[in-house]
Every structure is written in structure tokens, then in C-alpha cells.
Length: 138
Image (tube, rainbow, N blue to C red):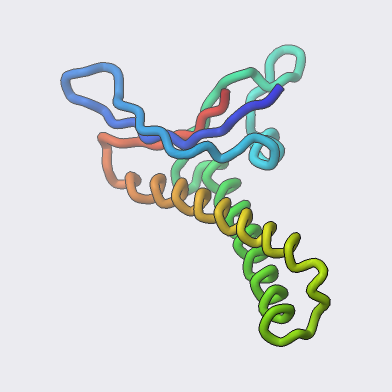
């Protein structure tokens, strides 16, 4: 079963019981599921339900998991950038693995930006009582 994880902003309206939901791009399914699984509630059989949510704000478990993922990947992007620089500019490495390193660099850099945007969204609404943030899976 493939679960996708999304960060959402919930905006309360004084005249409406249902909040407006602003969805952010999907955070994926494989790695984030593995990272969040210990925090997800399980059913009677010990299985993760097909849908659920976490609060997503500084200090919350889901926020800390995403922040840790972002930091880990950001460090890897830096390492890859250094390696690519050694290959391209200084000729100190074999160029045969350039394509795979560059592809990993670009993909991880894009993912770090996605994680950054999600964290920024959560950080930006902390002091606003009318807006909250959550991470949902389905």
C-alpha cells in the first residue's frame, strides 16, 4: 500500500465551521513513511491506517522528523556538490560517475527545497490562532 504525505495549512473562518485547506506539494511516500512510521497510530492488527494526520508545527514529532530529514539531505547535497566540483573543476576524480552524482544532486536538492517549504509554512503560522498546519497521509 502506497501512502502519500502532504502538509496542509488550515485556515479558520469566523462564520464557517469548516476551515479552508491549502495543500502543499506531496512529500512523497517511501522515505517519509519509514521515518514517520514509529509515530503513526496502528490499528488492532498493528497496521498503519490508510489515512491519518499529525499536527505539524515546531516541537511536534512530525515537524522534527521532517526537519531531521531536511538537515540530513542538505548535508548530502553539500557533499555531492563538493564531489562534483572536484570532478568538474579540478579533474581530481574520474568523470565516469558524473551523471549519476549529478542526478542525485539535482533530485536531492529539489527534495530539500520541498522539505524547506513545508517547514517554512509551519514556522510562518505559529503565532496565528486562525491558521494551523498538519501533515496528512492517505
